[in-house]
Length: 405
Image (cartoon, rainbow, N blue to C red; front, top):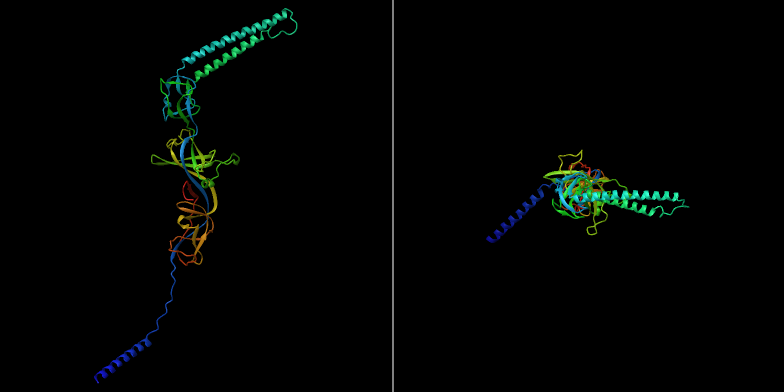
């Protein structure tokens, strides 16, 4: 029938199609086997070498006078003259008169004291003559034994001598008070403040101005305990340490300027609140007044805020690495001779914003990983791309207050 014929034809087509598919599968070429390659990222490495480095500790402070005094009048009187050098900011020489006080009363007192001395000397001479005459009279009258002091007028002679001594002391006081009508400082310096003017009455003990010496200024530099550990500070007189060199830096009028100084001492006590040690640096001839000074150089003025670079200890065989190479828990990553990552724990001397300084855990010739890799794993295989040479340097840089540990 028609349905049976259709079924036979359909079955034949299905069988034939299956035979053709089977033949194609049997006759297809064998696929080539491809070897699976592992991915090894290409990285840059830095070959490191140890260095002998010197630490520089950074601190900040204000310039202060090493010697500053109130110029005080020791006598009272009216100010009759003021030197042009007494105005604030002016310089003056050692023993230069800065203030004159009316001296007429003191000259009169000196004249009276001189008259008193002359009178006392005359009285002493008379008493001496009478004493000598009493001794001769004793002999002429045939006195037996030694005459008594009263017979020889010894008490009167001693009284006359005492009056002369008192008169001479009063004369010395009068001369001294007359000298004190002219006020000066015992050093060459600069005026910080003027407190009097012509016509003003000053009393004994009153300050007429504030002055400071210009031969040396000092800067108080607070240091943390960690900073102080990098320095050989003169903490005790028994240590007999050499002064520590320090470079003072400031920008004046937009021009960076530096001065050389020395730390010779530290403060007498540690600050109980901040727990810092204060090193005191001094700078000689800060105003360029000496014969060998550079007149074109800006002065290191009192009150200036400065930064100090203090030369510290030297360390041998220290590795200076880029700061980003130091990872959490003081670990750095190197690439070993099998081109695999090697995680190393290291001992960190200190860090700055740019560098990490390693004392232990590395050796010369180690290749430091310089390429950032996502999720690096210890032992991970890499390919080395660029090899960078080890850097060299002479200074560990600054250990600044409040900076990196």
